[in-house]
Each structure stands twice: as C-alpha cells, then as structure tokens.
Length: 270
Image (cartoon, rainbow, N blue to C red; front, side):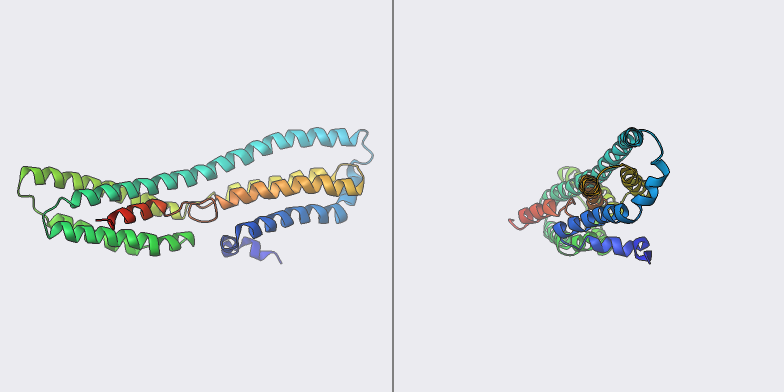
C-alpha cells in the first residue's frame, strides 16, 4: 500500500512541486499522522500507562530527554545538509572564477588561437547555463561538457609559444585550465550528493517516536489535538527544510547558475 514511499522517483518528483505547496504536503503529512493516531491509536496506548501514578510527569520527563537528543540530531543533520549546499556553491564559484581567468589569459594569445579559444570558452559557459543546469536540477549528471572541455584542451595544446613571454602566459593558462577541470569534476560529483538513507531512517523514526510519546499524555482531546498538532507541524517544517537542502542543485535552497551567468555576460562584452 505504501510502496511508493520507498520509490526514489516519488521523492525526486517532490522537488518539481512549488515550494509552498511542498511545505503544505509535509505539514499535512505530519499533522495528519498525529491527529489520526490521536483518534485511533492513543486510546490503546493510554491503557499501558493509565494505572501508573503521575503518568504525565513520567511521560513529560522522558519526552524532555528524548527531545534533547532528537533536537541535536536534527540540528546536526540540517548543518550537514547546508554544508553540502555551501560546498557545492563554493565549487561552482571557483569553477566560474577559473573559467573567467582562463578567458582573460587566452585573450592574450596570438590569433587565430586567441579567437578560437575565446569562442570555445563562451560556448562551454553557454552550455553550462542553458543545458547542464536544467539537467543538474533534475538530478542528472551532464555529460556533454566533457566534450567541450576536451576541445578547449586540444586547442590549447596546439599552441606553441614563440617567446619567453608567451611561455609564461601559456603555463599560467594551463594552470588555470587544470584548476577549472578540478572544480568542474567537483561540481559534477555534487549533483548526486545527498544525505545517506540511514540518516533519513533515523530522523523519521525519531519523529514518529516523538509523536507517540505525545499520544501518551492524559489531557483533554481537543487540547491534545491542538498542542500535538503544533509540535507535529514544526517537525514537518524542519524535515521539509532538510529535504529541501538534501541535494545541492534541487529545491529552493540550491545552487544557482548566477556565477556562470556573470562570467558569460563579461565574455560577451568583448
């Protein structure tokens, strides 16, 4: 019945849903789970602790201890997810910066090498913005950029410096090109970067245990629905935030192509 929850494509399709609508889905899932459990499961769970004196105090103490550990877990996972996005963003910025520096270096090459290399670099930058980025946002590693990068390298190797100044310029350009390749590989590796399934399992189990403990409180039913619903709603928002940062190039908290767009704009000014 719930096999779709184990299907990765189901979760990936959620990234295509507008942010507000996706947040509402998470809220409804958690609050709905809490309310349904309050109606159908809470009466049975309450039977186990009803004879215990000061049951609410005991449950409250256990819940407080549990929330400390679970809160730390959520915080660490959120930081890990954000660091993945931040690292991918830094690599994208470095790749764009090295591409810009390489463009400036090859602009000093004698013709026709300089003109051909500038054209190849503009073509590569345009490809990343227009074609590679939409693929990355769908979780697909773009492959055609390798062909364009190889063409740039082949054209650079063809150039034979004739003066000491050209030798220095060519060595610097090759150094920039190697840095560009390194940052490009790191960007492509980030496309599939995500939190391990084990983390998601522990995090979701913790949310369920948190809700189950709340069901054990002895209080008015309406109060139970209201207070527990608020807690479940906040859990849904936090887990949605982590889900949104789970992959660096997908969701609202993701890496944009702005750095490449700025470089491409600068290239077209020449």
